[in-house]
Length: 193
Image 1 (tube, rainbow, N blue to C red):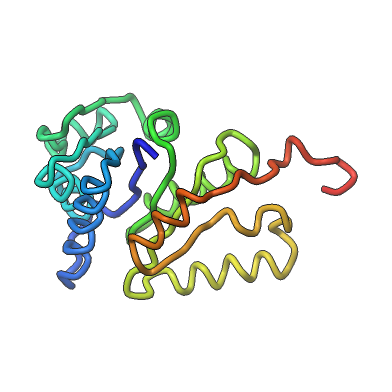
Image 2 (cartoon, one colour; image 1 turned 90 degrees about the horizontal axis):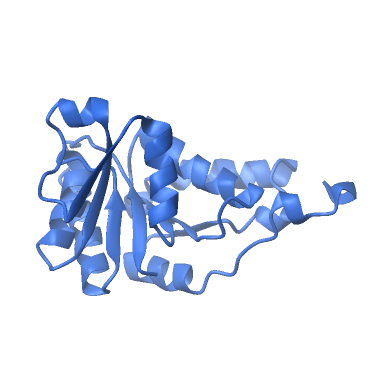
């Protein structure tokens, strides 16, 4: 994996573990020679991920919509800062520029990015690994809900393993590197759908 898109919050939670986590993720990716593709912001976990990568010799591509770039939250220290018109173009750029996705703790925007990566995998728009770093058990309930969707039958058996979740960054990266593409809906027999 040459570049990984990192989805995470732009907020700074009161608990300092989250900012430390963001920095650690950026640092780990840089040490492994993997570039960061992220939302282009300088605040919160986003800024911490970028700093962790840049401080350790990594490459950072920021992709930020014009509206956010104009509010001066853009991280001008990125190796490359790409300004796009809207969030749709931003997410398309994440997919185009990366070889996989890692979701860190975040809010609504982070969830939007994660679920789009999962959905696009199911549909065959990409065949890249979709990782969730479940640090501090942040995503325990989300992963339980994903299991519930599987049990009820809203996620097909072929797609049950799309989300690769781990609590440790190194283990997550190792599992993502070993990722085997799934059979997308468009390649399935319509009788089995």
